[in-house]
Amino acid sequence: MLLLSKLNLSISLKMQKYISFILGAFLIFTTAQAFAFDPPTKKNSKTQSSFGYEIASSTFQDAVYQSTDNRKVFIDFNEIPVNIKCIQVLNQNGDVFVKKNVYELPVNSLFEIDLSHFPSDNLVLEIQTFTDSRFMLLGGSN
Image (cartoon, rainbow, N blue to C red; front, side, top):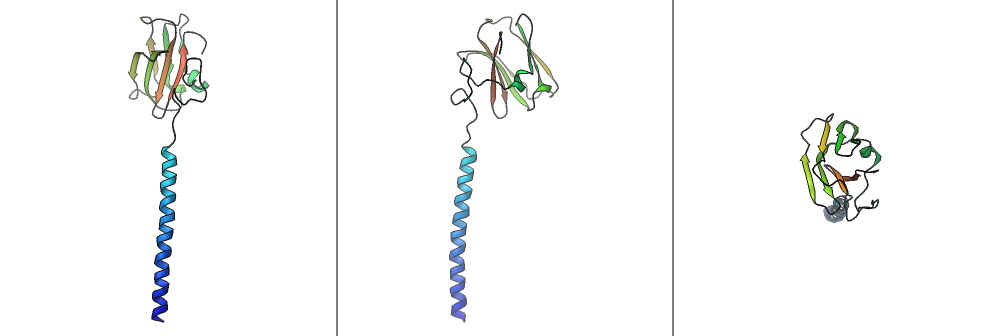
């Protein structure tokens, strides 16, 4: 009887090792899959505009207003459903003209950018959230 209980204990320990191995492998695999997510960027964007960056969704586009002469841009944070980290204005080559960290501003802010001292053609607005970035052309139709 004692031999039988030791045999059962031995089998039970071997099963625990196999189950632990399977659970560990599953945990490692699912963690690797979670960290393998590559957010949209200039390189891997599926929906790209003519300037190579991901086109901003209509939610982001509805939050951006331009003056009639296209020299001022207003961003209504209240219209964007996520928190904004940074706002940049750059040209199509990626040169940054304006960079403002706005994560400390209230979510109901109206942010203004004066573009009068920059060339008016080929400007791109980048709205960075804490998870990704959205881009849109400034000056013309988006």
